Image 1 (spheres, rainbow, N blue to C red):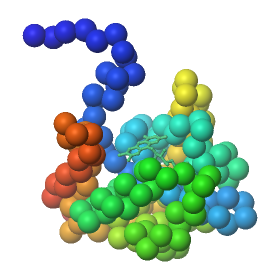
Image 2: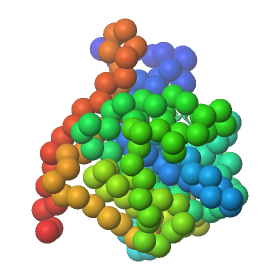
Image 3: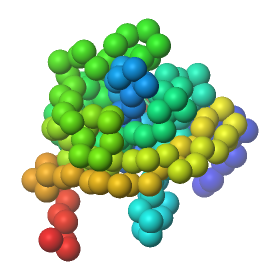
Length: 177
Ligand SMILES: Cc1cc2nc3c(=O)[nH]c(=O)nc-3n(C[C@H](O)[C@H](O)[C@H](O)COP(=O)(O)O)c2cc1C
């Protein structure tokens, strides 16, 4: 039977199966930062657009305000430790781009690098930033995309009873190829 819970933020946390991504950003001086974001969504085919919700205290939103482009990279199996690392350390404190858990490479149309061992990389230019409470919804137009069809997708599947994050991978097919 359904029961109410008046802690609505806790209820949002329970809505926990997320198409996790890496968000890569870069300052005007070339400092690169990477974070994990489960709050992302496709929001237009024509033009192709993607949005991601970023905490206002985080470093990534600051860099995206400074240099309005980003790369959204869909992770694959084996990138669990990288997601834990970039998802629990802020670029305000550590330089995550120096970690050997992350493999960066040049993008094709933006200055921000891609994550070369991810399943998909979307190179985006920011088209809109909407303030949504304690987050900014960053809306980007996808101007280039790179993929590896043989890599399974990794997603976030909530937490164990002890609070440990659970990641799952799924091999799906690009049926239109
Ligand atoms: C599985 C997972 C999902 C996350 N999803 C988001 C998200 O959608 N938006 C967000 O702002 N932070 C999210 N985070 C937290 C950020 O990745 C984390 O606060 C990070 O340290 C921010 O880095 P930055 O300060 O360098 O931008 C998530 C973390 C994990 C582990």
